[in-house]
Length: 250
Image (cartoon, rainbow, N blue to C red):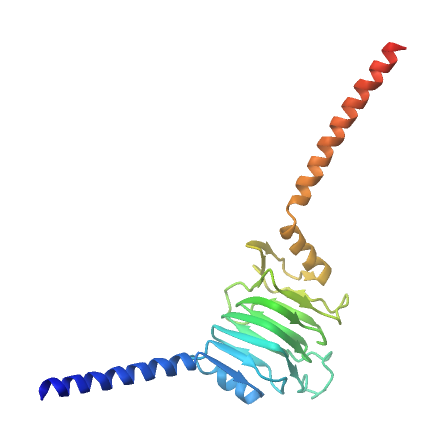
């Protein structure tokens, strides 16, 4: 009787353990369709990946204060609130509004558009990794700020993976795609395991970002130049030698 009871008890324990395990796994990712659902998911530390199921409009800056992956699923987060003390709807009025702020956390962003804010993204002493298409068009002051806010000592870092593409159709000289504020030091862009430190007040256009990527993707460019110079030198020497032979014959 005791053996049967022990087996029955063990079966119950195993069933509970398996159910708990399945529930934990099920809670590691969540699809959201609204501002409220997005904030709720960000507040749940069990959720490691958040997937956008539809475009989301928000009237507040979305703060990300823990490690998480946000898969935009080719959807958009758009800020539709006001700016500054005047309550303006014009995003060229400064109000410190970023669509997303990553605060001292490691965050991966995939296939997402961030638009409508003063800027699309603030990396505030955090580390953000880009995968897929990251669109920061339509923001009033530019795309992505790498900064350090009050009480932040860690350097902001942006890693651009090989499969990542940054989009900014509204870039202009006064609306850069990436910039570092004048009060920030130590900002870094990482491409292909190579780090590019950025200076205080530095701004980067898409062309400059692409140039950094090309310098990593095509390191043989400099080697090819040296090789061409080498072959040109050989050609000049041989041509000179042949020319001297001809003169001597004459």
